[in-house]
Image 1 (tube, helix red, strand yellow):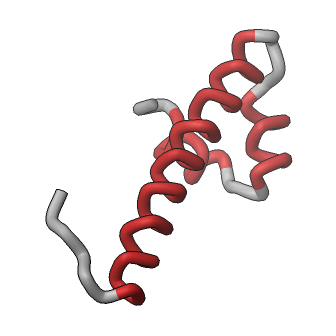
Image 2: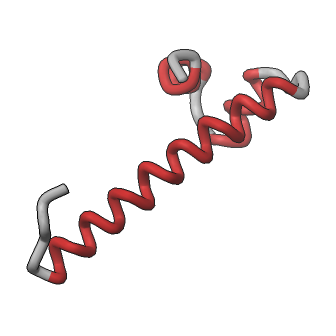
Length: 61
């Protein structure tokens, strides 16, 4: 990873790392929910997503 000297840019890098970690945690949580038998409809409702949006986001995960 390139060195970021500007504190404002460093904040972006840190935020991006946290964002990616949160995406991974969400993917895992969704798959865990599905593994215990909850429907995609329930998952979509909790996430506030449409069926199409959830399908695109999570079926590839």
